[in-house]
Image (cartoon, rainbow, N blue to C red; front, side, top):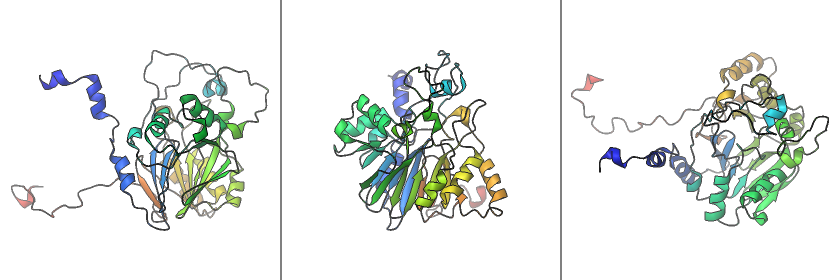
Length: 354
């Protein structure tokens, strides 16, 4: 049989997907986190993997799904948050723009699965399936009420789920996970199917979404989920020491307010009194793609006049960040390789050929 005869669409998918294979899974497993530091990896969107010196592996908002894949469907489903928000009906062209850097079915060691809220790009049935069927039955699923309801609907045993609301604290090895208020106002206009919510004051934010503060031996990491800007960030900044803050950033289409803008992100960092602010979420949706330079330009304009005590860090999906070792870095670059160049004799016709 020829090579061409052996190839099928299925064989192509197995050969090419996920794009990074198990590279990042292996990197995380092999990482030895030094005392008084914390390592973390950006998994795409707002997915975050945290690993600590005490061996805690905590996975938050890992999503392994897809965006739009066909033009044949013309309209949004009734009750979609964007349809509720602006009265639109046409399908939004949000194609997934980021590669899959982690294989969920190759995860071998994880101590907790977390979701800040129940929107489909922050909670994943593939991850849940693998963890429930193949890993330690003691691994908890932690999130607000609506996230837990979704996990249980998928088949996660109820006894493995922990509902958290602002103020709740959970200890995972050497890390304390503190649930804090979310400011995800898109969640407030999300309904289960179509419901007329005009004129109704929402009171269920704590059931729908939370932010997380991870207190680790290396530093405190604030995960804001899909929060919009809120003046209450200043309350969190006064109540807690925050070293690193992650914020959902994007270029909102006309008629939509779903992501923080560049100035929102800087205001959040200032209010939280953090040391480093990291924009996330901007990578995933083709129709929300922003210009990261906007953050840098505004930070440069305002940092001296307002005496900012923080700086932005511009990450890459799949990249590792170690705090406090990397706290002075502003840009990330993947390992460029070729570290062993000229350790062996080159095989070229003569030395000056290149």
